Amino acid sequence: MNPEGNLKQRGQWSSRFGFVLAAAGSAIGLGNIWRFPYVAGENGGGAFLFLYLICILLLGLPVMIAELTIGRHSGKNPVGAFEAIRPGSPWKIIGYLGVITGVCILSYYSVLAGYTVGYIGKSIAGNLSSYESFTSNAMISLPLFAAFIALTCFVVQGGVRNGIEKWARILMPVLFVLMIILIIRSVTLEGAGRGLSFYLKPDFSKITGKTFNAALGQAFFSLSLGMGAMITYGSYIKKDDNLVISGTFVAFFDTLIAIMAGLLIFPAIFAMNMDPTEGTGLVFKVLPEIFRLIPGGTIVGAFFFILLSIAALTSTISLLEVVTAYLVDEKHWLRSKTVWIVGGITFVVGLPSLLSQEGMVPWLADLPLVHTSFLGLMDWIFGNVMLGVGAFFIAIFVGWVWKNGDSTKEILSGFPGFGRIAPVFYFLLKYICPILILVVLFFLIKSGA
Ligand code: PFF
Image (cartoon, rainbow, N blue to C red; front, side, top):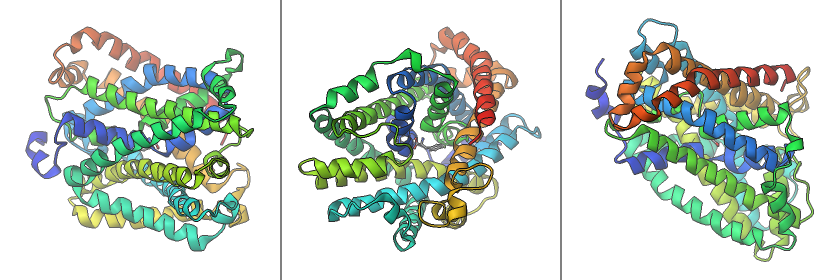
């Protein structure tokens, strides 16, 4: 197996900038703009933000670099990567779990992404009727869901440089600029100050085990870690790129956008006397109401949902790319055929999530025993538990199993000064990451969905 040899067919990012944009596109998504604010709102605002930043630094960053290192060293998808480094060992199961997790996250993520697109139209039409009436109308939500998957397939079909990188290059800077404009609007609303202090002044008495769980789970989800997305994206990085700097850039931009999403949403919520603990519906239920009360809200609202759709698309692209890279590399399927087959499967897997939303199929909306919706259960199993399990084994693999010499050599090839920080990197991977993840997984499973 010669990773250099197969790079020609697999493609590579055109530059470090291209990689950083694409990987930041994967990381930045509904997780930052929809999930981060509602989880932060439910977990005490500033206290959550504080813990979240610590989790990103101690856990997210080392696992991110570990995934990129595995990916670039092997030049492969997650299954092929573990097989290339430890042939014939059970480690490739982690890769298979990643592929399955990819399809499952993609399935419910696309349901929400479909709503996001729908809300662009709703904002423009000035028809901001209730969330429930929208989600319960399958005539609207079903085609939007299918269209979003199709759009993702269309982009991924183009391959690394023409598809993913080209789109990320255009879309990510647009997203950034749109958010800055919206933040300026939000923080200048009357009464915005209360929202800013809720969000930026940590009240440490609010930190509990639950806050810690929420912060850690959010860190994985947001950085796209634990299912091999960064292994796959790392496989397209050139040998002389600096993995530590590139990974740090990605984590930095992702965290920046999450912080910005909070700056956009909390001042507005407090200015409108609304509830920060609104829950999963926060963006879809509260924001349209806020936009309606803001002068020019139709435009602001439409902009916001365009932005959210863009962010979602660059994330769904990476979810589909993990599965596609596996089937193209290992099973030698044609890329153009693969994306549509996987897209079709994702559509079927996502249907119960779509039908579990308000006003559709009651028993799917409130499953027996777990008392959550099917979509909520999928997010809990795949967005929380499975990403944690994956990140745990990736940390163990690079920290303990893969000879440090090899991973060090891989990182050194684009970063000659790595030796100085290597002890910190391996200390975090060997001890801090596995222990923290185990503790959190234990609490997650104990407290249930
Ligand atoms: N990081 C993405 C977000 O924050 O929306 C979601 C995601 C993408 C999770 C890719 C996992 C993944 F592999």
